Length: 424
Image 1 (cartoon, one colour):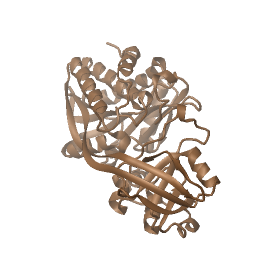
Image 2 (cartoon, rainbow, N blue to C red; image 1 turned 180 degrees about the vertical axis):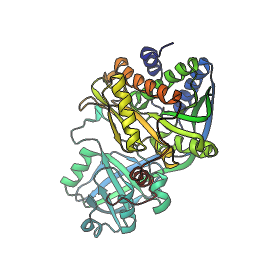
Image 3 (cartoon, rainbow, N blue to C red; image 1 turned 45 degrees about the vertical axis):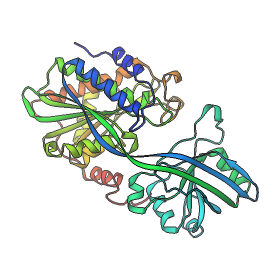
Image 4 (cartoon, helix red, strand yellow; image 1 turned 90 degrees about the vertical axis):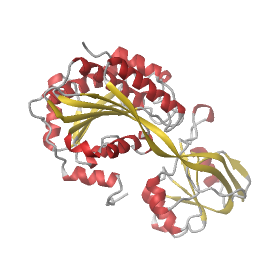
C-alpha cells in the first residue's frame, strides 16, 4: 500500500476552517482526526490538557488631544482590564524601545514597533508604562481585505513581569496617530482570563523488533484567528495521517508514536503538555520527526535538525538518495520539536516554505481560495517524511545519535527563556 497525496489533500479540504486554541472548532478537528486514525485500525485516543485562555468583551481607544478621534482596536487576551472608567494618559511613541525611549515612557500610553516580545515587555513594565499599544498589518491595508489581529499576553510575559493593559491597532491608524501628533488618549479594556481545555490526538504503532525504542512523529492541527491554517499546519497534519496509514500496513521495527498537537500557535502548548504527561518514557525516545508547513506550490524544502552535524549529514544524504532538493541545517525551529529537544530527544523537521509572494501565514490568506498550495506540492514533503521515517524506523541501529549539539541546547534554552540571549 502506498501513501496518497490526493487522499491527504481531501482530508485537508474537509478540515479547512479556523481552529483556534480551546475552541469548539479545534475540538471538532481533533475528533475528526481521531476518527480517521481509528478507521485505519490503530490504537488512538484524545489526551486533554489545560491551556491559559482569555476573551475580550470591550476595547476602545480615543485620541483626545490635540484632536479627537476614535480608532478601532482589539484588546490583548489575558491583559489587565482598565475598569469601566478606562484610563487616560499621555501618548508616547517608543519605536524600538531604546534607552532614550525608556527614559520617557513612565506613566504614559506607549506605542511600539512590531509584536510585543518578552524583552520589550520587560523593559516597558520596569520603566513604568501605563499601557502598551502595538500595531499589525501594513499601512496600505484596506479593512475590506485584511483583519485586525487578536493577540494574547502569554504567561511567558505575565508570570515574570505581571499583567499590563495592552491593545492592538491597524498599522495605518498607528501611522495617522503619530503623523497627526497625538498627545493625549483615553483607552478602555474589559475581558476575562480563564483556563480552557485543548487536546492532543495520539496514536501508537508498536515496533516489531525494537519496541522499546520510540520514534515520535508530530504535527499541530490548530490555527490562529482569521486563518483556516491549511498551510500552517493542516498540511503537516494530513501528511502525518498518511504516514500512520502506511506504517499500520508496514509495521516498523521501532515503535512509532503519532501526535497531532493542539494549541501550538499559543506557545507549543500541546507538545509541552504531551512531553510533561509522558516524562517517564522520554528516555526511550530516540528521535522526534515533526512536519510543520507544507504544500506550497511555489517554494523550497528545508529540514532544520536539532541534533548534531552528523545527523544533518545523514538527513542530507537521505534527501539526496531520494532525489528531493532540501536545505538541511543544524538549527532550532519554532514548532513542536522544541519540547522534545529540551528533554534531550533529537528532532528533525520537514517543512516546505512558500516562495516570496506565495507564502501566506497567520492571516486570512492562509486558505484554499488563495490558490498557493496544492496536492502535488504536498506530495513532496509527504515523500520526504515517509522515506526518512522508514529508514530510521527500520534501521538495525538508529542512525541518529541521541545527542544534541551544545549550540542547539543553548538556542532551545533561549527560546524557552531559560537563559537570556546576548541580544534581543
